[in-house]
Length: 624
Image (tube, rainbow, N blue to C red; front, top):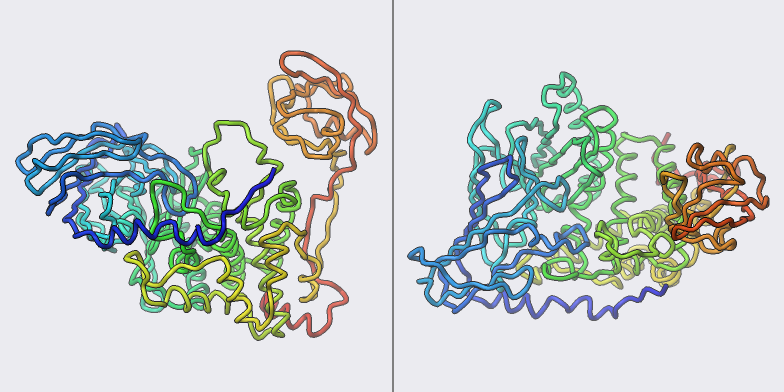
């Protein structure tokens, strides 16, 4: 499988014609009304009033995706009951030229257009919205249409929450304001509107703290609203967040906001958790009750999401803002915006005193394990993984794919590249510089530059600008590093770079590890269904195939015992007959088992470390 990157010039230019046209258009008066009338229906009622209309038609467009999640979701699937009227409440003609656009004829509008529609919302994730009897968790991109050609125009949002009930009044919580009884808000443009998620509920818990004159609010929504341990848990969560914020704010320039809101949801009945970054807020969803363990997970996620305040929300690739919401906005730099952020999440948990050195190194060893277990590491580069995120970043898969064998995670490889770059810079400069300096250099060069568009201050960077920053800060030449490890698929030099700080990587095989069959599988009624066959592994050589169901090992049923236990009866190299169901037919295939893979990774101190290496290590990890 060959995955190609588009030429870099295409990436930086794709949104410019649209942006220039939008900025040249006379602004309209645009007001959004959101009514939350009946929670049990999961229906959001939206009204958009547009004034100063002097053109024959307007297009109202609902995004196909939301920034921060690189997948086309087609939010328009949940739109219903669209209608349009003019100044005298007369119906206006409209059509739908494509799945996400409503074209309204405005000749008879009298200068004012009002559209109404309803949105079904019952998914608690950072991408979608949920409205039920406990709350409304609102991701604006899934709700609010924009007026084509007028994304730069200022907008007003008015929210009408449900009436008070036995729990009290529903509070409106967002990054717009610290007030919870304010229902009308202003945003300088559409992009800023949809970068401000909202929680509306009568069941939230609150806390807050200060750092560098800025207010940080902590909001928790959970189903166990009468939990007696909740006040202690909230205090523990807030205390951890204080340390994370202090550490990350100490590293980077103070962000340009007065307040920031952490919105947490603890929900054990959802399919998976989530975290989504925004300009001055984040939504963090934990698949668990509010507990000690879930607070630990929430803090780890928060360390990642808060670092996005700088890395991607402000210091951003050229294609990520302003956005084309109708199609994919490609970038080869997601390894940097997400992977480097993952690396810094680990680093700041350590610097904040919330994790030990051993915890930090074990996190990195876990990232090494995850990449080394991926066959796709030999096929897909960090840049290609970034560019092709639209194929697999929580994107629904209808057709069968070979992603298990042909792809890697830009989060995973990016985190390891962050570690290696940090170590390389520290070694080359004898501890005088680090990746921290690169982040600050880029932030000053790009975000603190004059605004290039209406969206935000500063301008976006290209992939080559990351290389230029590394070279400028280190005084070295990272071109070969980039060619081999970022653009290419060469094995990452863990051992060499960790040795620079007196550390070593070790691999071991678990004592009870069975011989390797070389498959990924999942339980089936009669045994194990193969979901992926590893290239050149035992199963591949024997002719086993994806979707084969293994029902027995040497006539011993796999319906009554798991595969690993059955395989432990045999030594590596044993030739073992498997009973296989394929397309309704039973067959027998003999497999020569491979040795178990070394699947346990650790990073530890090298006994031969020199004083200089120990000094670099202590500067990197801090003193014990």
